[in-house]
Length: 351
Image (cartoon, rainbow, N blue to C red):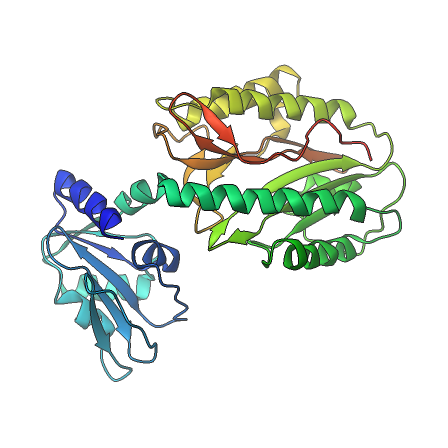
């Protein structure tokens, strides 16, 4: 915990920030190793360039903090924003998750503050330490284990909703975890929707199946997508294009490249095959304590990749009213390339 605070304080000093105001529950957990669910009530971790970090928390939530943090309490008869404001001065980074109702009140109460985007926290969290990397590996290994079961669960006659429920049960059985996000299961033309909601469509011979799923290990998320065919399917050539795009993206990952360069490596394969207009989303996203973390593997993200970053490579092709293919793996950036955290095969799509 102390090392993470010191890393942030160093960056704050470089950027001339007197304080960072952090409200995102997963970011608070990252720094103090405690989970929170405060609903609509204010929570704020205030990290100053020097001195003890302060956690402003409602009295309703019992908590003991380590000695290198100060716990500041307020109750429902007090203005939490006023409590926060007394610890702020000068240039303050505010994270993007703090509700506007709190932020606007702070701006009205303290017009003297210079409030800026607090993305320094994103920078710190994007690079995983050795302990985090081990947890990310195990989360993906557990996800692999469940995906092996998925191949057995995909059976003619089942609905998308039935398969989703069976996958969620397999997570609890094989990974001792609930899903890290809502499991996506789509059949046939529904595969053309990247965020399809499982419904009552029944699986029949010749259909394609997309499964996008993940679990947690000690708070850290996994995320993987595989596309299958129940018997041979006209989308098999599309599948091979997406697989090659996935491999090209993985091959492009190394310290020093930009996220937009990795996106370009994937997108170029799909464009050369004539499907450019049908790759309709970014190539990937960061992942850790939250399933979607900065930064984006996208055409507009020029952030430079660093060793220890973890993110997805998930190109896809989506043909309206026909179907779609997506293949997703997580990668961990190493000194000279990357480690692919998923080991579930991508060259055996036909069941």
